[in-house]
Image (cartoon, rainbow, N blue to C red; front, side):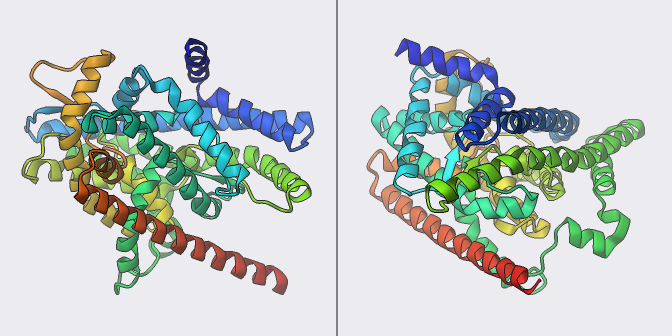
Length: 455
């Protein structure tokens, strides 16, 4: 057990920019790629992850202080401190049984691949913490650690099945073949899917409005750099920044929205040869079996719609925190709400209007989930001692990821009949989402094949 724990800790210490390229190098060599090609692709992937991390940190480093200043300007003091996802990850990894989640995830993934129950090979090991967090919350609420691990195992399966349907859409959005995003934040699409169906049937809202549409309709104002500058400037003024501070934020936002697509091209450059090598290997050895490589969500960060939606929904989240009765959390560290936008981006195929509506509708869900889970997060934080919690306050996370699944799983683990029925209904919604997106993917594939035949 101690050796396994040390191995897991060592892997974590490498970080995604090192560990994921090593895995991809091994995958490339197994797929019979030439060493120089596999090594070059893996190294470029590490560079892409490093570059994207730098730009994301630059973006959040510029936006977060403005958003937090806007939060301070409300003058509201609530009883729970928002620790954001970094705080949750820190206390999750400090849980004594955290290291057991690695073999659980890898084992489930291997079994599902062997029996053709999934097409996704998930190499995103850092986000194992999300399964740990689920296990801890379910364990604390139900009083049963075994049920916590069962809930985490179910989450692993759901992520892999979600990865299967997101693969074609990730390629459509990024141009990168053979990859997917089996991330837990995409599970929110389960309850957003009915909303998307309604929006697609609603007059005036049933048109696709993405960055290309905006460029066509509003010209220069639809360009990434101009959108970024305008949004950054407005956020700066709203946060009480001076003219110079607001202009600086405008340029920083513009720079980030221009740099994201540039870094995304490195992902394509790195992953395309590996994807081709894997496809060739699967054709020769396993009768053309399809496999998606599961990576973290930043491979989608090149889509400007994602960042536009995140920034515009900041005041929506703050207003919700102020007016919602019973809410105990004022958004601060988690105010950059990635918890809805990745699922919304994939589900709507980058329809910015639909994404904004989903951000509006889900804000109360995140805040009430953060309020509900605050006592349990506080208990975990105090038990592991990795974060400082002010006296008389609680610790939480304003944009609590996968709130629907985690809440239902926790109470179903207590054998609450209503929670069990609700979780079954949620699984039914996930099945509906899976079948609908799978149908859409097949329709796109047939259309593309017909276009190729005509050409």
